[in-house]
Length: 195
Picture 1 (cartoon, helix red, strand yellow):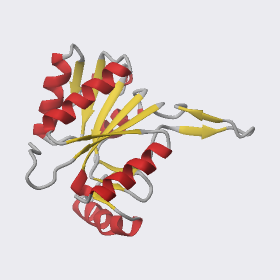
Picture 2 (cartoon, one colour):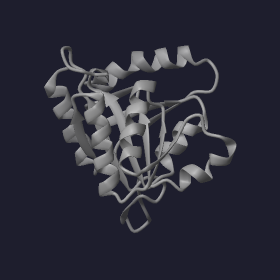
Picture 3 (cartoon, helix red, strand yellow):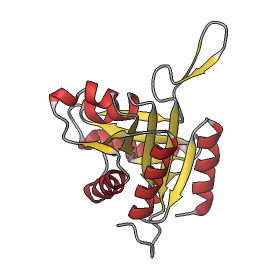
Picture 4 (cartoon, helix red, strand yellow):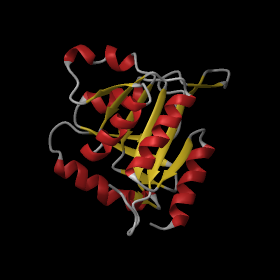
C-alpha cells in the first residue's frame, strides 16, 4: 500500500474530527482497539462486520482487558437495546476513500448499522490495501457490492463523528450518532503479518 494514500486518508479523516491509528498486524489492531476503548472509558463493546480472524483477535484482546464483548449473530433481545448499552461499536469497512477521509460500510442486516451508529464511540477497521485514492475509484467497488447483494444492502459512508448544525449554525457533535470516531488502518502490505 502506498504510504501517501494512507497519509492522505489520515489527514482528511482527522480534519473531520476523527482519529486514525495504523496497525501492522491483527494483534496490533486489536491492541489499538483496547487503547481506544480504555481512553473512552468503555466497559462494553459491540463488534460486527469484521472477518472471523479479526473479530476473534479483537474479542480476545478486549475480553483480556476486562471489556464485555457482544458479537454477531445478535439475538433479537440484543437489538437494538443491547447494542445501545455499549459504549463503543467496532465495524469493518469494505473500503476507504482517501480524498474525503471516508469509510464505506456495507450492511445486509441492521446489526452493522446499529453497531456503527448507536454507541457513543465508533471504531472502523479498514485494510490499507482497500483504501482508494479518489471518489471515481470507488464506483466500480460500489457496483460490485450491489451486484453481489441483490437483496437488502445498505452502503453507509462514514467520515468522522456525527455532526449537525441548528438554525443558529452551531455545530454539535454526536446528536445523531457517535460523538467520537476512530479508524484503525490495518497495513496489510506484502511481507507484513495481516493475520
